Image 1 (tube, rainbow, N blue to C red):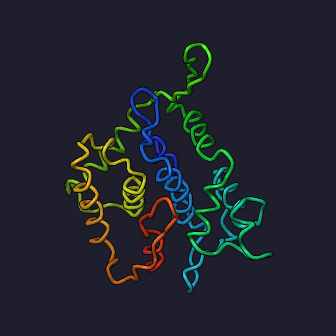
Image 2 (cartoon, rainbow, N blue to C red; image 1 turned 180 degrees about the horizontal axis):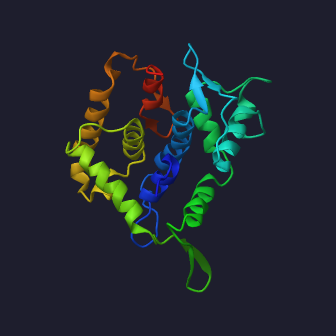
Image 3 (cartoon, rainbow, N blue to C red; image 1 turned 30 degrees about the vertical axis):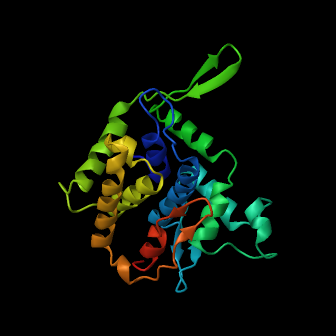
Length: 236
């Protein structure tokens, strides 16, 4: 079953018991927001102008209602904290601005859990801890979907396949940014750095990222993410 980027990233974050593997919550939450932005870019719902700012394509409408809802949330000023920091009547233009606004979308992660439930990939289970506190788990019902994605990621990192699609490159970048490589690859903490370097090497080989200004980095205070979306803009 084909999953879009935010759906695939969230599925990869769920362990065999249905718990999330968010060792670094801030990294994951912003990576999920970045996944939404990249999916909108892949589907040509948004693109870049000559100044590398985001523009909405009015001639394309997606069947994915959540993505369309998120697009409106980003393109129409609202009462979220980040929007109030922008100048009156201004429009969010840069990828950084869009990611920050997507990150504030109400119950973003919960909405994507529900999408995976609707596709019969996961289920929802509520457990009571000492009879008082609720603990929600999302057991994976269709393990083939997750295993297929993990196998593909391993093939790319091990260079068994040197022709990744643009979507696969985006997912690789997101997995690295979300700090999920250790759990996905089943490696030791001491081996994570090498795996991250391998992913970075793949991205650099496919696109001439070295020539870009290092200042084009997404810096969200708590975490600094790959400037993959900026790099991609140079090839659109």
